[in-house]
Amino acid sequence: MTQMQFTFSTAFLLGLAGLAFHRTHLLSALLCLEGMMLSLFLALSLWTLQLNATGFSASPLLLLAFSACEASAGLALLVATARTHGSDHLQSLNLLQC
Image (cartoon, rainbow, N blue to C red; front, side, top):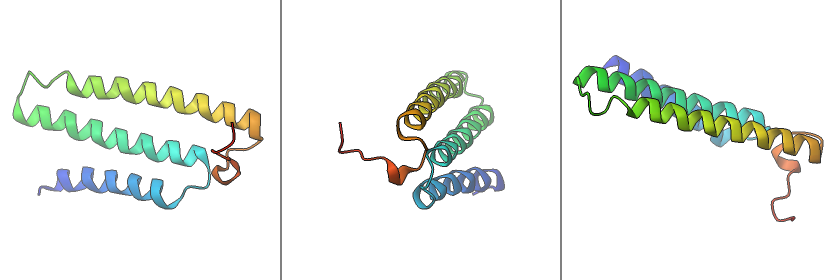
């Protein structure tokens, strides 16, 4: 495993650990998801550059587009929960309630 692969794997795992262990605010969960997507984007783009594969050159852009859609949906949910519940604490959200 090269140093660059180790760096991107570590960044992804740190984002995953932050998502798993620090679930107090919805904003922190969204930031961890964005960090994971950013590390995946960088790893995928460097992988296509190292292999000189022109067939996979659209994959990082597609991942970036899905990441932007995920970020906008997450911010919309953040605003909606902050308006209805008054805060973004995940403990105050009751998912069983309609």
